[in-house]
Length: 299
Image 1: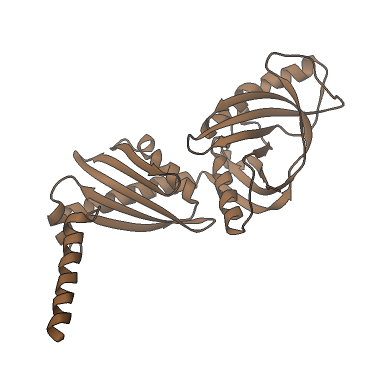
Image 2: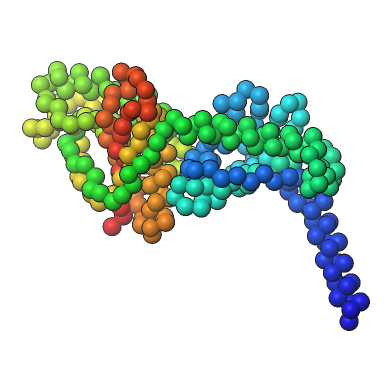
């Protein structure tokens, strides 16, 4: 009986060792936490190459907000990176970064648990480089005051655009004076702060259909125009967050709201309303810019 148990244990050990040396995807795993959402980490990984001249990345596989596989060129060597992202709560993500070299895999796996090989040092440098960039990105905006609240209601003059979340601010800046001039030329009285209504957010393609809107009052219609149209925005129950930062990145407030809703078992519509307190054309410290973000609750 003892010999049988010993044989089974040896077999299990051989299988485990074989899996570790020859089947396991990565040679080394670096684990870290980030005080942000899974989606923010996901897009930071996807755009990492744009913020770091010392690397070249190619995404070869991904699962939205959860996993990315990349080929990486770093210091004249090639690696495969396996990023796994998990949500701890609505503002904390846990990340496992698996690193696989394109050579010396068995040696890397044998030595990794025992001492600081060059491969292990490089793997840590890769992880620390990304973490540094992520922290820099997170320092440029703030999301706060998440709660349930009615969204604003208003009648507006609007212009539609189809773009990405990052391209939203460009359309706002282009159309701010455009709609303002139309309102003034037609003696329409403005009322309140500009708004963006996201009619649809395609998460897989990272694209939006948006209306940039100027609140107005005292009218039930507006003079015909090839691009500017009248819209009556109704107030609805929503989850609200306050975003401070460049409006180009306000989607990070969307992600916080999505995670908040998930953790509180609240279903949301695929629409978003943003109310802006500052004109981006005036510049200044973006952290002083304020917008109120509302995502309607599905009834």
